[in-house]
Length: 284
Image (cartoon, rainbow, N blue to C red; front, side, top):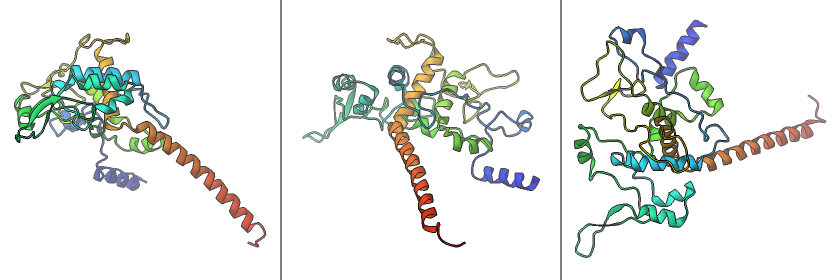
């Protein structure tokens, strides 16, 4: 039995399913720590589970947080303005929102590129001209694009937790990680030194600290629907919005999956009844 457990753990490590919990004793004694130092906190998302759905009010608040805070550094180049209609905005509202941006188009008849007002078919423009300019403005590290960040930054949960996730349909690792990261800035523990110009965050998957300063504070973004204007609420809203940006057809996928499962159950029942009918008079 002990050999079986050891083999399963070894397989999990080979598959990249190693533990991502708090640092081990070896790490505390100067060994190589496992990041993130703390597991991402689980949030009760409306879109979680097999019957989850997006909260359009939350997505609209998340868009507001992104545009007023995150868009200054992070692009979202795979998301078109026209898709914002799925958040509950009318066609006129989408046009008005897109008109707030200038995009590069061309070439014109003279062979030159030019700037024009964005239209719904355009995509969110990047805040920097290129990756080099982005890196130069952010201590040498270009901020990642946010189009798929909620799917790309999910911390894989270790054995045996990932086995249970298959049955519970846990697919919220990305939003949980983003929420935990945004709310996880704190003073480093006594005895821990972080590089100059970085900020301690035990939820960061790359190291114990990161170059990005705490990006948001209480009352920084004004909500029109009376929702709390706190870092906690801002973090939940923008994480939910980024999940929608990464998987806008999540609700359709879950509805289709449910119908497929119902069909398979009915089909299995019909096959069983057919088998009983065919072999009812056969000698066994």
